[in-house]
Image (cartoon, rainbow, N blue to C red; front, side, top):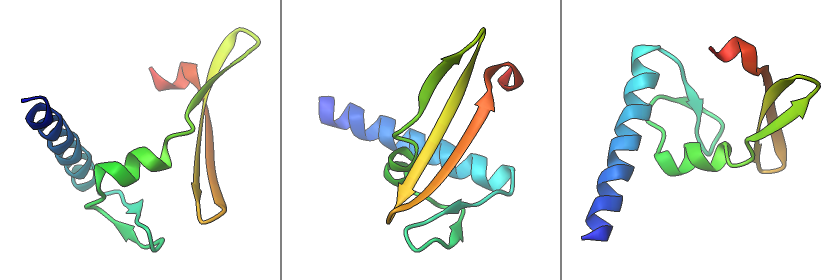
Amino acid sequence: MIMTCCLMVYAALEYKIREALRTKDVYFPNLKYKPCQNSTARWVLFCFQGIDILPISEKPQFSAECRVNSIKYSNSTDASTLT
């Protein structure tokens, strides 16, 4: 029962990721660094496993980092721009 529920959540997450990539016409790098629109949920979550909130002064900032084969992709965004 619990395994079925977990698989349903995983499938729904993967569907939402793929649907959002297609509707916005954006690509996510796959394991071979080629752009694709049908990424797995496991790969997307793996790439964003280092998301942190950095409280700097009064505005908290989000920092995302993706390490793939020792290549580091990073992105920092001011939290006020996300609303």
